[in-house]
Amino acid sequence: MYVSDTHALVYHTLNRSARLGRKANQIFVRAESLQAVVVIPSMVLWEVVLLMELGRLSLDQSFEHWCRRLQNHRGFDIVPLDWLDVNEARSISLIDPYDRLIVGTATRLDMPLITCDQQIVDSGLVETIW
Image (cartoon, rainbow, N blue to C red):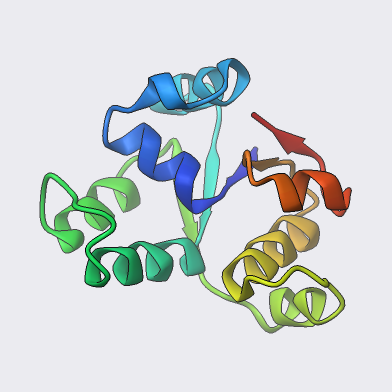
């Protein structure tokens, strides 16, 4: 099981897998074929909404349909924000509040995080895969 950050999930679901690292792409391919599970923190979904509102992201379907497709696929697991994620995030010194909560979720679940965010990678707070 793996936790996905926002960019990794967006690259995968919008068929931009060429932007994913080789290992990250393999994990998403395995999740699609039910050989792995990619956990999606609910904060990732909120960040997608904000990126859409800012005009920095456009989905090829409605946000609701996109979420339902993920929710109904057994290779993906959308997890709600838990107070334990917030508690973990409190001690994380990353600037971006969404990254703090996503890293907090990966820490709480003790799972590697699929990300290329250099600040997260350099922090060493969680195992990262790209």
